[in-house]
Image (cartoon, rainbow, N blue to C red):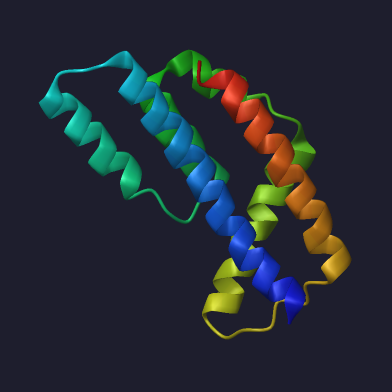
Length: 122
């Protein structure tokens, strides 16, 4: 039960990493009010952070950023995929077979993802 709860929280954490860093970039860039509002609204709707969706939304800001993320360590990509896949199973009442040891490792990789994402979105 704890592993399932942590998995759902980890999925939300990854969503927030993408939202926060892209929103911060947009704020610092000081676009016109209308453009900034559009960016904020688009980023705020980002959910279910499958890795391809992370690449897509980040690539809309910069193809260079997308390329850097596309080269992330496979263990980080795999952890994000597992977090989101298990989150979907949990949210729909299905058995995920997720252990606390597995989700602990996924969360560690999610923290690594944040560090890499922060470096990428500058």
